Length: 488
Figure 1 (cartoon, helix red, strand yellow):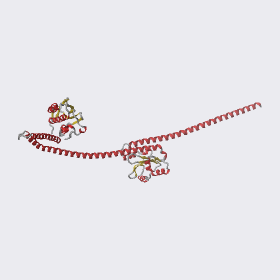
Figure 2: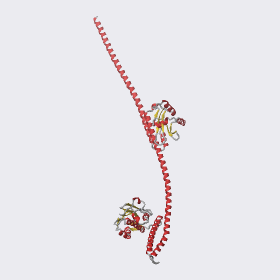
Figure 3: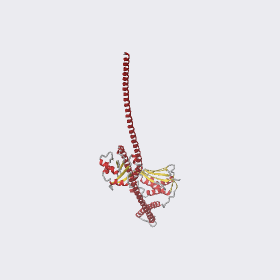
Figure 4: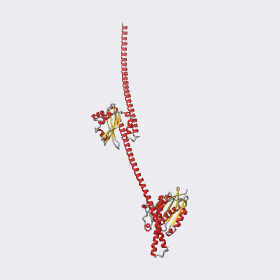
């Protein structure tokens, strides 16, 4: 009987052990299930996090794409409006590049006309004519003038006045808006409104910044256009004044030519008329001085000699006047030929030898290669040398020097006649070639002259196609320079 009992006890013990092992196994499985559930929960949270991150990334990407699109649109609009100087074309370019790319489907721009004291519509995108009439009628509020005056931007998400915010949305038929001032330096100012019918969440500080940039670009473009218009009008007025002045000057020049011709004709006529009686006076004086009609007392002879001397001076004056008149009127043709400068200078030096020796003045000459010959009217060029060298002798103190230099100058010869004389005051240099002008100096006060010599010289030089000028310093000397053609 003991044996079966032991077997039962053993079996019972085995059952207990197996039950215990099963319980432990169940506990272990339960722990594994908990861990697995925890892992699943963690995976679920991670999945949710990944999903949320993906959604946020997509949203960020969309915002970034929208901003990039807005920046490109802003760049295009800015480029277009800065390439025109026509105020109307500025807003037309904005209309061509639709503001949808900036995130707005509606836009208006108004300029305040001070003279009319009202807003003028210059840009309309997205509104019907009837809506525009209603909007213009509602713009009497000073709120829009304050935006211009205070130079600030308002938007539907920054405007703290809820009733005003609502009113603006109703007037402009939008759910969100931005209003930025247009502030060109020149001319009328105004404001730009952009709006969208989408929820306000679409607008941000970045959107407001973009519109501020656009408003600044429009303001600058308007300023450039107005400055250009102002400059263009000023130029037109200036050109008109120049044209009027040119016509006046042309008329004055024609009048001067007529007066000059009349003067020349008058001088020529009077000179011719004077020559006849002067010739008679000269003839009768010469006969009386020769005593062919009988002897004359010394006192009478002295007076007759004075008459004869003054008659010679008058004849010389009349001849100079006639020559000037003829050259001016073109009645004298320069008979140009090849002339040797050495021969001309030697001849003039020989004629003036007595005056040179009386004052012990040394005359030097230098003729450089390529300037030995000139193409000129010999008779008239000799008169030029006589006048210029004669003046140099007249105004050079004793023991002075006069130098004559000829040098090549392109297709002409330049001749310089320099002296060590008393010089010419600077204020007189611009007048010495004028008719009857005489420099105020002690020598001219003692010696009489007509003031026609240099005027005649100038006309002879210019008739040859040359030019003449002078340089001088008081008490140091004077240099007369002139050009004359060379033989071809």
